[in-house]
Length: 224
Image (cartoon, rainbow, N blue to C red; front, side, top):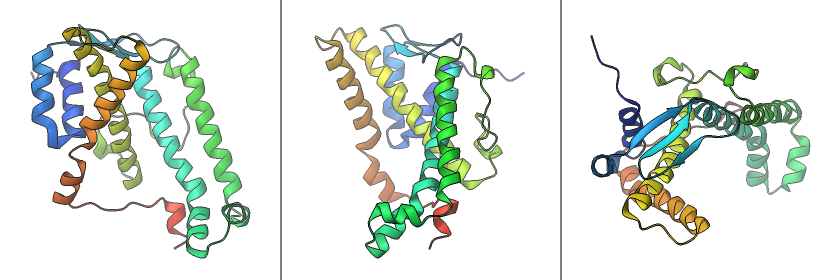
């Protein structure tokens, strides 16, 4: 019988997939620090933290990343047509927004999704909220998302989650090495900077080496 990968291995695979140009480097650091990864029971608020021994999060926080990420993509549907019109014609943005007859319903739906994401933070379990009908349930199987836009959002959510986990991994490194800055705000900034540098420093070279495509929202495409 095939053995299920550990949570620690699953997180490592996520990080390797999010930053493939530095996959060997993150694997080496992951092995060097030997920390644990703990999936805690879900509770109110957001659980994403670390010390010198472990990175800890709960499944509800992962669901929050998913829901907020898909909601953010819907924001592009709300405002991209007016942005395109304003860019192409030189029309003031507020005027372009006013002539977009479809924006009202899209904006209402978008705000409802954001409100649902906010309610998820206050809930103890994901099952306590009403999941938006037009956002797929969280899944680790990207290929099960038949819509190409949903697959793109899967990737963007994975990048956001990878950034958060790299941020926490930097906390692990600071604690283990006893090298943390003297104040917590400085440490938080240091973790953000390290995660951002890790994810972006090789991005230009990687993008140049690999073919990339541009994906438009379904609504903005209708305006072209």
